[in-house]
Image (cartoon, rainbow, N blue to C red; front, side):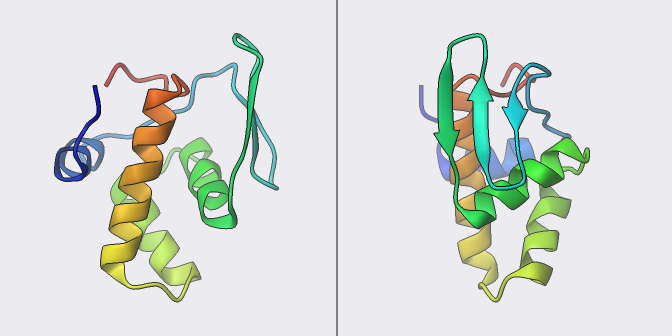
Length: 98
């Protein structure tokens, strides 16, 4: 089931979302799931999102942080973060049962 962007924004902003504990990442945006053997490469913004998730930031603070770091308009950040969170969920990388 795919979550629509509006629903994701409403839901994800309400709590801190964590990656599963067994998910390996690095500062360059490489993500590895040892349970499945799947690996992923991310772009710099997605790598920053992962870093902030690991720091325990909630989604609203992640969006604000990205706005401070990158010269990108707020609607673009909102859409990109929501889509990336859905991608993490679809690939079973989140600890939370969304």
